[in-house]
Image (cartoon, rainbow, N blue to C red; front, side, top):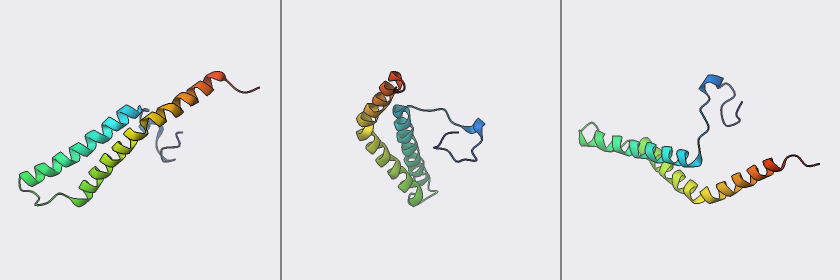
Length: 92
């Protein structure tokens, strides 16, 4: 059981682990998709203004992606440190 998922999450639904680069790309793509959909709805006359909740979500995704890009070198250093400690084995 992974600690980043709800306890009642079925095992067959567990998503595969993704790299930081893949996660950043997914955040960017989803935020862009939301913005494009909102623009399209305005262009075809379905809406007069973008949905506030959707736009807040897209902005939050862009901000999260920007923050993670800045943190990526530190995350990589921590991951390398963890990997090197695991290679050393247990202490005696």
